[in-house]
Amino acid sequence: MNRSADNRRVLFRLLVVAGLMFGFGYAMVPMYQKFCEVSGINNLLNPDDPLRNTQVDTSRKVTVEFDANLHGLPWNFKPGQTSVSVHPGELVHVVYRVSNTRNHPVTGQAIPSYGPQLAAAHFKKLECFCFSRQTLGPGESRDMPVVFVIDPALPKDVNTITLSYTFFEVAGTLAEPASKPIRPGV
Image 1 (cartoon, rainbow, N blue to C red):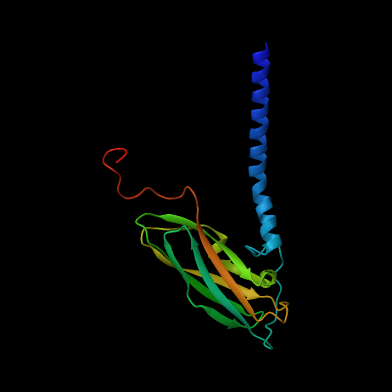
Image 2 (tube, rainbow, N blue to C red):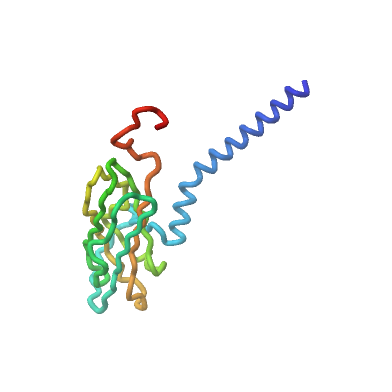
């Protein structure tokens, strides 16, 4: 009887731990989104926000610098241009160039970040490759567009904004290599 009670107690504890792990995993998405919102990382345009008809502020220019980084991806990734000078409120089109250097498809997700951090709230992306995962075939190269507007409400003392993307490999999406070993374990 004592052993059976011990087994039930262990089973109950394991079920509680499994339930807590599931709950934590389920809560990670909203917690990550809140963290990104608070820290200014991955500032995406909210489709529920009404788009305002903004006037271009021709009285000043802001330099937007572009940066590209890879985290464990077998790709080449760079901006089409290193910087651009724009008026706040002006619609801007730029591209990033990416190439897969492997002989199999690879999927990645780009995460944007901004410097200075307060600029993130004023950097409105209308089109961006970072909105979805990108899968590149073997040796494939692609120009990926970014269309953005800098809100004229950007503080006057901010003259330079850095838009930096880091591409991360999406786990579990690698296709098998083109050649397999003849014998298992070789």
